[in-house]
Length: 406
Image (tube, rainbow, N blue to C red; front, side):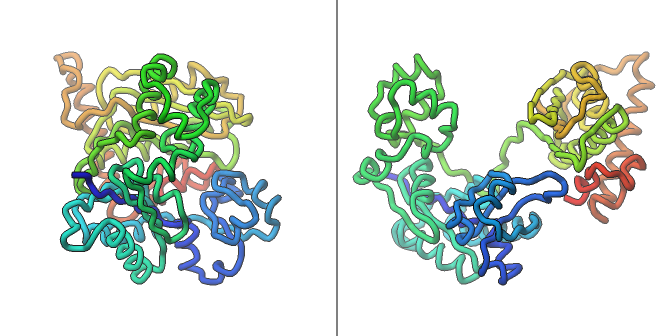
C-alpha cells in the first residue's frame, strides 16, 4: 500500500510574518532583507505585491529596487520566525508524530496512519491549511503524494494557500513537462550538465537510461533519475528524532572589510567563540577546523586542518583558524566575509590524546579553559549572548557583536 506523504511549505514565510507584525506592510510591495548598512544586501523574502514587479529571492537590494523603486525593506526578526515555526509544527503534530522539518518553513508529514481519523491526504492537507490560517494568520501550500520528493514538488506546483495531489496516475502529466531544475537537489551545474545530453525536462530525465547517467554524471545522476521516476522511498522521520550534526559553522559579512592582523584576529575570535558555544550545546567536538575567506571581488577560498585532538574550545578553534589564514592570506588584503567551521564531529566525551607525565600540566591547563568556557556558556544562557564579550569586541566597528545577540 502506498504511503500518504504531505509536504507543507509556508508561503513567503519571513515576509508573511513581518506583515503580521506590521499590517501596514500588506498594502505595499515589501521585502525582507539583511541590514544594507552591514552589506547583507540580499532579498530573503517578498510579498505578493513585490512579486508582481519581478522581485525575486536572493537578488541584491539594488536589483530589486531597479524593478520596484518604491520597495519597502523590512529587517529580519529570526526569533519571531522560529516562534511561528514551532507553533506551526505543533499543529502538524496533531495529525501525526511523523513530522520532519526540512527548513524553518517547510516540513514533511507521513499521515498514512491518520487516514482513518482525519480523512484522505487531500482532506488532511486542507484541514491543516485552514487550521494554520485560523490560528496563526499565515498560509501554507501543501503537496500530497506517495513519496517525499513528489510531495515537495506538489507544494511548489501551486501557490499560495493551495493543495496539489500527485498520484501514480497523474504524476507524468503534472511533472514531466517541468524543467529539470524544478526537481529537488537539481542545481544549476547539474541542470547545465544534463542539458549537454539533451535532457531539459523531468520527462526527458525519467526517460533516460540509468546506466548512461551513472557513467556520465555519477551517483548524483542516478539519484535524480530515481526521483524523476517516483522511486524515492525515504522515510519521514519523527519530529523528536535526533538528527546527526555533521558540522557547525558561522559566517560573517563584516560591516567593513577586515584589513590587518588585528582586524582578522577580532573577527576570528568572535566567530570561533560562537561556534565553540554551539558545539558544547550540541555536546560534540570537532577533529577538523575549516575556514572560508571571501574577498572584495566575492572570490571564495577554503582551507582546513586536522587537529591533534578533538576540541570544542574557542581558543583552539581561533588558533587553528588563524594558522590557516596565515598560511594562505596576506593580512593587508581586505576580507569581506569570514567563515569558521568545525567538522568531523565526535561526541564530547570521545577520547582525545593520551595524557603522559610530560603532558599532564598541559591537560590541567586545558581543563581550566574548559571550565572557563562552560561558565561563559552558563552566563550567556541566563542573561543572553551579549551579556559577556571579549574586551577586543567592545565598541568595534566590524559588526561582530551581533553574533552574540542571536
